[in-house]
Every structure is written in structure tokens, then in C-alpha cells.
Length: 216
Image 1 (spheres, rainbow, N blue to C red):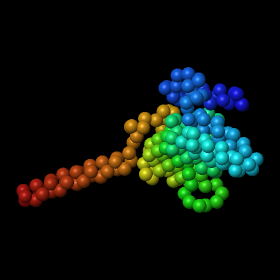
Image 2: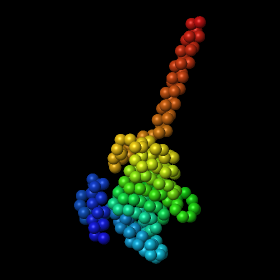
Image 3: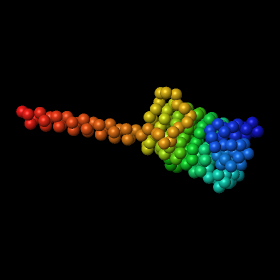
Image 4: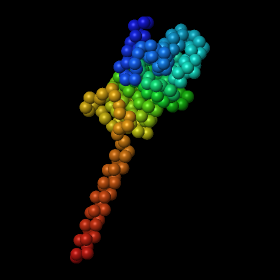
């Protein structure tokens, strides 16, 4: 248990340059508190102490602003940065070395039964305000851009942005763990630019035809 706690603290220092001391991390990092509360709640949930498990998770939500259902399965070295507004659903499965920023929802799409929340594989990064909905799979090393809405599976080693989420990088240059939220590619803006260039090209061709017509 103490080894896992030490590991959790070390992840914060690796991911957050603002972390200054272990005592600061232990006492003030809400993402860390939410993960620790979840481990206790998940233990009781697995032993069918559902009411106690939900009580612990709701207390954690009140304390941290992060709601993790006690049924969710979470791997090692999860880092929740800031964390306010993060929601993780009951049947969600999260692998190892995953990073989640504030305002992220790993939720369902309706009242379906069974597996209804996402599976997030190892080394994935989900940026601020992203919504990942339904029983979909987020591949290893995938990155979800800030504010994206993802409703379909994301291949490994991919970057997804937009509403709905669109893959903009896949199996290209090695994807780093950091994600510049202020410099995300916009596939819709890029397509609009392409259409604008096509219209300009057609306009120039039309002007050339008009000129040829005058000279005849």
C-alpha cells in the first residue's frame, strides 16, 4: 500500500512542474485525494458493500470536485491534473500511466445496461473539457484534444480533436506525452481553408475565360 502511495506522489512530480514538496502534494492535490478515496470505495464495491462504496465516492466528490464511480477500474499511475469537474462512469476502465485534465467526462450515452463507459488504454492523455462517451476504446498512447467529443473508437498512437472527434495524427512521428492545448489542429478549419482556395482557383479561371471571350 505504501509503495502505491509513493508511486502516486512521484507521478505528480513527473507531470506537474508546480509541485514543490511531498507534503504539499499530499495535502493539497485533489486528483490524488480522489484516487485514494476511489481505491477504498472500489474495495467495498467489489465486496458488494454498494451503499458504503457510494457514500465514500460522494464524500470524495464533495471534497475534491471529482466524481469517480466506485465500480470504475483504474490502473496504476493515473494523474488527474486540477481535476474539478472530472466524471468517470461505473463501467469505465482506465489503464496505466493515463493523464486526465479538468472537466473531462468518461461517460455513457444513455440508459443502456452492461459495459456502457469508455475503456482508456495505457499512456493515453485526455485534455481539458473532453467528453468521451459510450462503450468505446481509446487506444494506447492516444491523445484527445481539449473540448473534443469522442463517440467512436480511437486507434493507438492517434491524436483526436473536434466535435465530433476526428483523428488528425496516427502512427506518424512519435507522440509525446505533453499536449499543447493552445495549438491543436482544427480539421474543420483546414477543410474550410481548402474550400476557400478551391473557390479562389475557380474564380481566377472564370476571370481568364472572360478575358479570352472579350478578345475574340
